[in-house]
Length: 545
Ligand SMILES: [Zn+2]
Image (cartoon, rainbow, N blue to C red; front, side, top):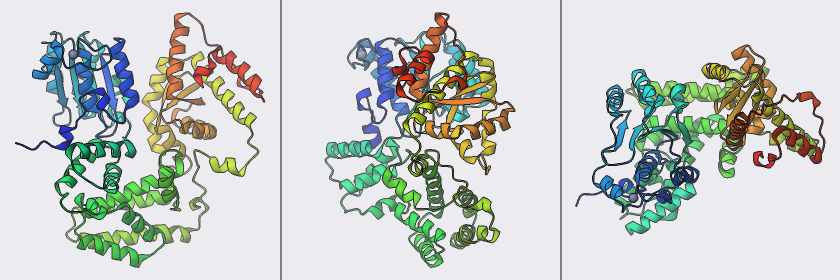
C-alpha cells in the first residue's frame, strides 16, 4: 500500500475540522445558511493557513442539497456525484503558469451551466502570480459573473493584486495558526497514528512552523518516520538544516556585545556541523524584523517573546544597516566558494556597524532612543499619570467626530485617487522622521475619503491607539505624499463593518451626515460623552464601541 503523506491524510474535509480560522468559517457557513453567496471571494493569508482547504470545503458545501447547517452532508445526490467527479470545482495554480490561457478558457466556458452541480467554483491559488493580461481577462469575468459561477481567489501577497480585482471580491484575511491550536492538532494526529512523541517536541514543531499547518504536519511526518530514536530538540532543528532560535539569539547578542570570540566559535560550529549558512542569514533577518516589530507594535508577540526581543537595544537605523549587510551577504554567499570566510567578513561588518560606526559620528540623530516612537505608548502613560479618564474620553469623542465627518462629503473618486498613490508611503519606510508612521500606515488602508478627511481601517485593534497618538505626524507625512492637508482618523475592522452598514442604511433612507465642528467639543465626563456620541451616531452607539 502506498504511503499517504500525513498532510494529505489529515487535510480538513469539513468546516468543523478546520483549525485557526473560526471567524472566517462562521461567516462562510452563515452565508450558505442564509443563501447570501458572493460571486467572488478573496482568501488572503500566509501559506499553510487553510485557504485552499476552506475553498474546497466551501465549494462542496455551497453545492450540497442538504446544507442547512452550512456544511455539506456527504450523502445527497450532488455530494455523491461531486465525490466521484468534481468537474465543477476547478483548481488553477497561478504560480505554475501565469494563467492567461486558463483565464481565457474560463471566459469562453463560463456561460455554460455546471455539469452536475448548482455552482461552478473556480479556485485560483496564488492569484497574485497572474500576468497583467490574465488579470485583465479575470477582471472582465468578475465584472459580470453568471449567477452559477463562484470565484475563490487565494493569495499570500494581496498587495500584488490590482485594486480593480480587490474591489470586486469579498475579502477574508487568514491568520497564522497559533501554537496552542497547532500543538493540539499535532497531538490529535499522533494519537490517531498511534505514535508517541514528547509534548516538548510537538510544541517545538508547532513553533518552528510559524503558523503554517502544512509545514507543521510535514515536519511531524519526518519526525514520526525517525521516531525509533529519541529525538532531541537540536535534532529537530537539524532536520530542517536550521539552528535553534536560542543559538541565533546568542549569535546576534555576540554582535551587539562585541564578543567576537563567541561569534567566531559559533560560525565554526555552523560550518563543521554542515548548517546551511544561507538559512542562518534568513534567521538573523527574521530576528531583526521581530525586534523592530516588538519595539513598535504592542500585541504582536506573546509577553515571553516580547521580553526576549526587547532585550536588544537596537535603534531602527542600526537594524536598517544590519539588514542591508545581511541582504548583501545573502546575495554573495550562494556564489562564494568559501562561504565560511565570507560569513566571517560580514560578521565583522555587523560588529563594526553596531559598535563603532555611530559612536565615531556622535550624531544626535543616531541616539538609540530618539527615533523609536513607541506606537502603543504604555511607557508614556506610566511616566505621566496625568493622563486621566476624561482625556481618554476626549480622544474617543474626537475620533468619533472625525469618523462622522469623513462621511459628510465622502467621494469614491477621491478614494480611488488616494489609494492609487498610497504605495508612495513605501518611500518613507527608510525616512528617519516618518519611518515609524509609514510602517504603521502600510498595515492599514484608506476606506473613506473626501477632500478634507481620510478614514483608515486597521485589522489589528492595537494599532488604533498608536495611530491616534501620532496623528499630527501622519498628517504631515500624507501632506508630503498628496500635497493636501487631510485630517485623518482610523477604525477597527468591526467598527468599519458597522459604519458601512450604517452608511448604507442612511443612504437608503436619504439621511445625510451632518458635519460636526471639532472645536465645539469640550467634554470632560462620561454623561456628556454619551450625549455627544449619541448625537454623532444615534442611539445605537454601543454597537460601535
Ligand atoms: Zn449534500
